[in-house]
Length: 117
Image 1 (cartoon, rainbow, N blue to C red):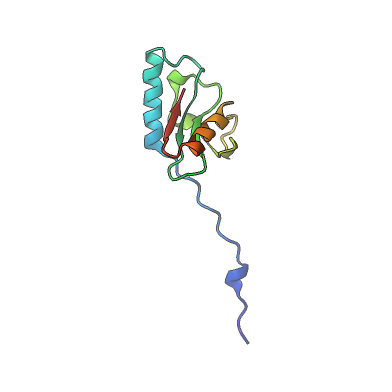
Image 2 (image 1 turned 135 degrees about the vertical axis):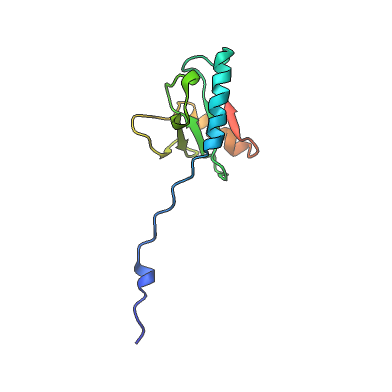
């Protein structure tokens, strides 16, 4: 008699959490500071995002809503899917109201790596 297939009934391991692209986000933070210093990006106006590396579906890291763009830090970005739903939730933070627009740009133009406005 054959042994039971325990490997087939064992739970699958949880998928690995997406890697945060810290170097890319650090560049966006530096750009935001430059734009702020030149009065191109004021206070909480505007949003910045970068495509999640390797994501073809529009997933991106976007600035959380209501943050002063002159004081951004890498931890101020949220990973969202193409429908603007947080992939990695950060308590008390929500994505920008314009997140769907960013996702649309990433889906429509696969060569775009970042959106600043």
